[in-house]
Image 1: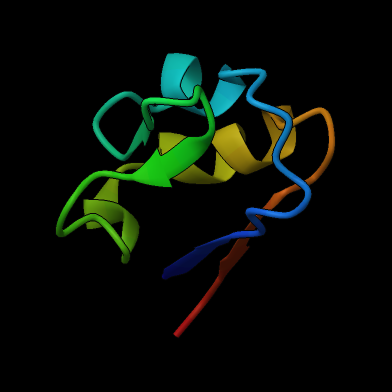
Image 2: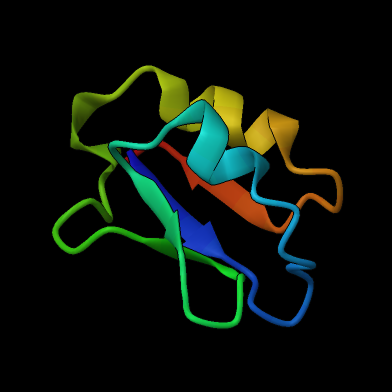
Length: 64
């Protein structure tokens, strides 16, 4: 799995960090970012749910 965050689309709603706190966090400005070493989701099944929870669809999860 590969996770990408579109920083231009992110509005800082924080749903990703609330849904999958082992994968996502928020930077100092409140925008989404991946925790270090979690670019592949670290096997967390909630990573896909976090992408679905994003109100502006700024998170993309792909296989491979």
